[in-house]
Image (cartoon, rainbow, N blue to C red; front, top):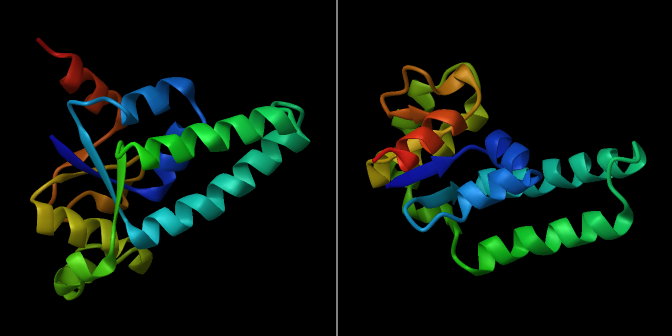
Length: 144
């Protein structure tokens, strides 16, 4: 199964051990549009800084977490796809997500791969691609 991950769900799941385990499963291919990966990196940095400042993580724990995330990408568990692969679907994708023009890359990538979108927000509903929440994806992958 192939799913295109949205930046917000990636940030949320990458900071959780259970989320990283889901993203690393061999029975699912997690892909992310380059733009969303860049946003993920930016938002993840902000999240980890906030968690460190709040005392929820030490600096060493934040460094270890970043190393775990880098390992997911280098192992191929999360595959970042360049824009040139899905750019031909940009106009259609933009039409399908009028509420947030920055959400077009996951839609274009999902259209190109004929895949679903892993998301936690409702902006992708009605875009013409299946959507998965973390909970429903986990249930589907664990089903007999």
